[in-house]
Length: 196
Image (cartoon, rainbow, N blue to C red):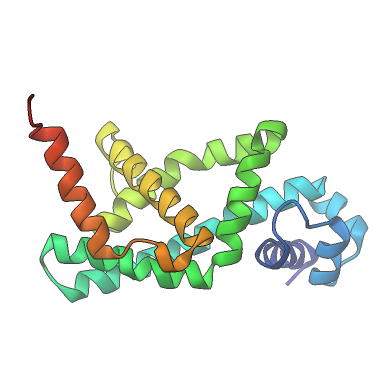
């Protein structure tokens, strides 16, 4: 690998191990085996490098999410069974990528004060939503339609909430069956409300 690739790999390692806010330029240089000056030369700033590393790492994690769905699709043809299996499978992704999930929350909290970071997350939003829509439907990709963006937004919201619960208290995070039961209950109360 060249210096640029080494810096990216080092920055991703730092995101997993130290988080977004605690990673210094020196940490990245040490982790990548590249000089401090190379960060400025290749990326302009530590923040630009960390943002790029965050987006790339999220993409890699998306591949892990896709593998969960492939496995769930092999469990059953029943959409309810697959839905629960996906959420259960996400636990392994959370364990494997725990540092990145935590770094994302940390970075999101700082995005209001870091326009570059906010732009990086905003740019990835639509792609991420379409990716989640595809992942949860067991498809390689979905068309860029309002319907698929809405579907992806719903899953993105569930996923962020699940992640927050899992990071705070993994033993209390809902199971796939809990998600399925909750979906049934919420759907019923929205589409078949009990009138007083």
